Image (cartoon, rainbow, N blue to C red; front, side, top):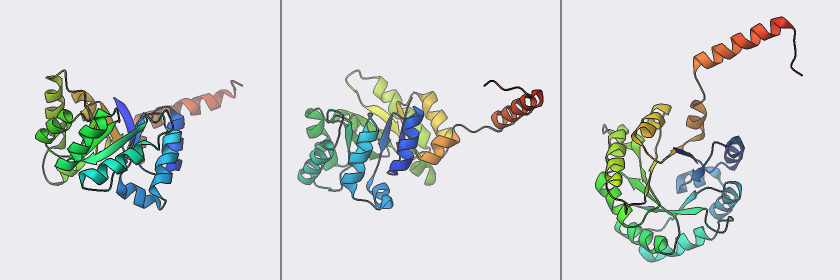
Length: 222
């Protein structure tokens, strides 16, 4: 499973990229607004830090403007201009834009997916990624992971579907594990959730015991 981080915080991205655990980045207008910086500057800087896909979302809702915005965002990529995935909403105009951009070899992340039927449309439109929002479904009493299971199963039936399932709106580590067990290709995680994957009390307790015992020997490796 690939790990993307869901943030526009460049400092966080720089730290996580140095860990070697980061495969890409997803952003959205809300995250960009939270950064308090100009959108194009933020996307450009992230694209320089991360060689993997960097999702940058259009803000228009009509096809013509979406297409113009998508091409402008794509041009911000610094790695042969191929590391920006243009993010479009799962609407008729969004899927039309997806088809147009993907036909030009541009990566597209179709976002705000909440049903298997929508995921089928995204794949047919040539999306590189489809982003089902599991946490938001859980919030309204539906089963977000059931949607992931359905989409993964459907995509496996058709060799012509090249779209990767990008699990979004991840709220806790259990979402990540469940998605991995189902065979989802990518999970995009807020930085705090990614860091939680390291944590287990037995790891902390075991390390403390080892270090306490080592300190009693008075030895040093160096």
